[in-house]
Image (cartoon, rainbow, N blue to C red; front, top):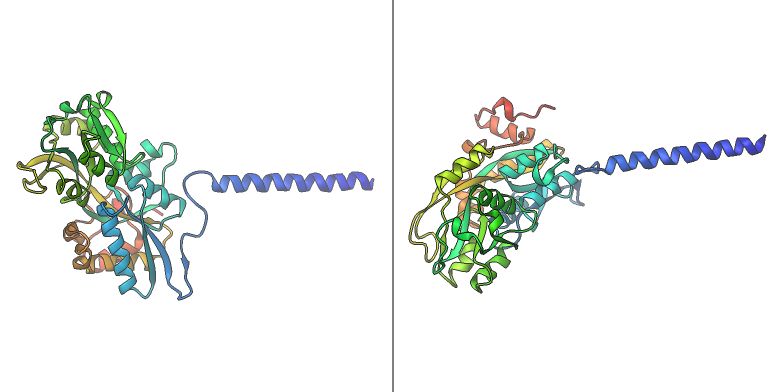
Length: 346
């Protein structure tokens, strides 16, 4: 009898362990973490990590690094650290996993992440919240000024850097080239901004896609060594992109003289850089980040002049995810009405 009782106890314990194992597996499956989102350091400050871009040639890196620097200078509440990353797609995934508390990402990529589309297929990231959109990021297709490539169709048969693998740039490049009917005719090369700059200067590739504010340091790195031009995106390709369900893209003109060798205005499209946070970041922390962002534009502009375009009155233009309550508080204190569709439902 004692033997059967003992076996019964063992059986119950085994079942309990199996159940616990299943629960643990379920809790860690997917893109969203169950771990604490933010902790405090020995000084009692909230420690946040800001995911930026691929390195010094990235505007995300310049703006994100300066934002961290200003936060550390101005805030008694937050200790910030900016890190390099694979840019928009990687940044949204890092928010989902709790590896980042704050990140910069293209607004189209934030929408894909929210909806679980493309690189986020089957794994929507519903913990994303917005502080606001920052500035437009045009698609800039760079070639050497002496290149025979004049149009998107001329890219057929060429080696084209389409961005880092898995990046928002790569997604945009594929979309644009498919709309132009040449995606299957190019040889795609996956490189970071820095790698692409060297490849183009050395003549190892024929063109480079970037999605970045202008003037872009990553392109200036090329233009100081060899003159460059930008390839235009014509109206028919823009219309096709809109018809295919990509409403984020707006038409912009990059003026002649932006880069060495660029003698003509160039029409292209743009998305919006967006500052996003994790939904579980405390309201007081997000409020403080929002306040420091808008009250230190001149400091941010020392890192890149595109920061001068950051304006709280345009923060909702192209915002594709709900706002964080901490950001909402700041906007409402400054008399800005927050649309109902941008208020979180929970």
